[in-house]
Length: 86
Image 1 (cartoon, rainbow, N blue to C red):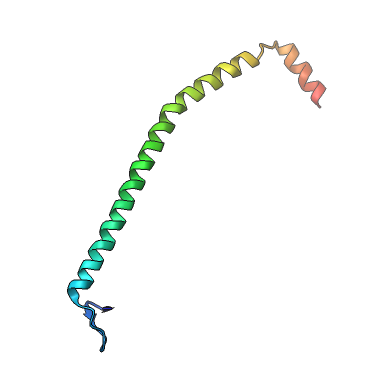
Image 2 (tube, helix red, strand yellow):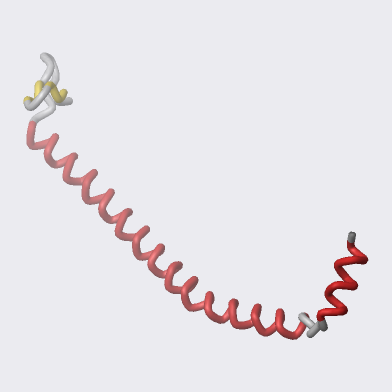
């Protein structure tokens, strides 16, 4: 196995690992890593688009439910409720 010393690759004595094998293994590792990254990016993009599509629907239903639950109160009722909570 080559060892990196500064800007030079060094092959220790007794190791017959050739530069071609080293380059081939490095290319295989890089291509495998790139394919995994590509898959992850595709998956994340799909999740993000699904999230963005569902977000406006959720907020619209929340606003509608909130408006239904919230009743109109007069100032007198508000002050009476505040006094009761104290």
